[in-house]
Length: 225
Ligand code: ADP
Ligand code: MG
Image 1 (cartoon, rainbow, N blue to C red):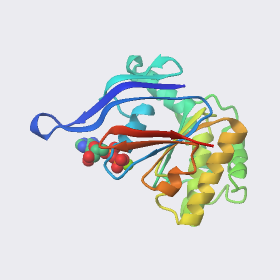
Image 2 (image 1 turned 60 degrees about the horizontal axis):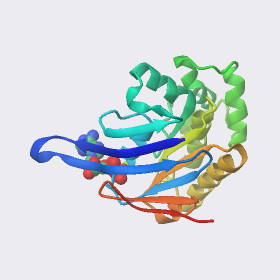
Image 3 (image 1 turned 90 degrees about the horizontal axis):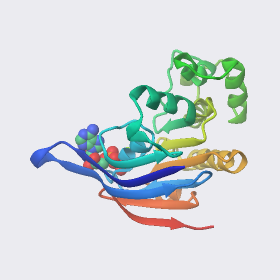
């Protein structure tokens, strides 16, 4: 599903040039649950942004379902992000003047094939355990509930791949583990490929495969049952 080959990402130039990713090569298959782990500054967010088409300033090759990302126009890239990928972030990134339902349907305003956005949002909110929060505002919710809304929003277009950047980073241990269980469930029951970026080993361990970054280099790629 994803083939990364020789990807290097520099920030800055000349004497202040910093190498955030260095010759990264890896592939991730459909249905995998992968964590990308490493200390702060190791390049995790940079790599996730490359995979999600949020960054274009890299060198190398990234293919998603056989399509070279570099060859996509900005418009094609936005369409890909809007229909095939889901993003989940540490700080939830919900809009507080909208209800939970409206937050979930937001991408439909930018063109989406979903027929009945409100009905789909309600179904997804029920799926993540928030059937009673459809008309609530994010400010009325706990951190874990906010992240569930963000996950429902990510699922809205029916993506095959969800990219998560420190999704448990603002949550306590127990709530974080419950969010990871939700990802495990989505992965197991719907075959959605999940990639979770984290600096915490106990979060990384939840994934069946762990890719470790140090200074922008993949230093470990470990699979287990
Ligand atoms: P992580 O997510 O693992 O903490 P990042 O991918 O955010 O790491 O950053 C990797 C390195 O690239 C860090 O040294 C960081 O300071 C640098 N970096 C990230 N984004 C930028 C940017 N927009 N401009 C300059 N340097 C950046
Ligand atoms: Mg980061």
